[in-house]
Image (cartoon, rainbow, N blue to C red):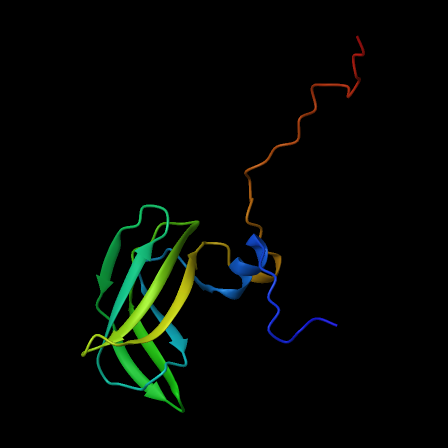
Length: 129
């Protein structure tokens, strides 16, 4: 039996456990449970590939212990972002990872969608010298 704190992370499990956002520039909502409920926050998104950060202006609403951030995000498809929500004093109240994708069927999500092609030109024979 594995200990309670045991965590085995693979690429697939990390992508399935993070938030998914579509690349559309229309208004989207992110809902989460923060460390503290406040009425004004700063959302910082950091592209994990280029290590560039951008601050996104969002609307904040709190309901039943959940915080909802509503805004328009301009993200690059198939890219991981780290998300950091801070209150006015600069204290971090939430951190997470976002994966931007246009694939909407998350149960059948494929990280390598259209990346690999099967090679059919060889007959799979070995040459022994």
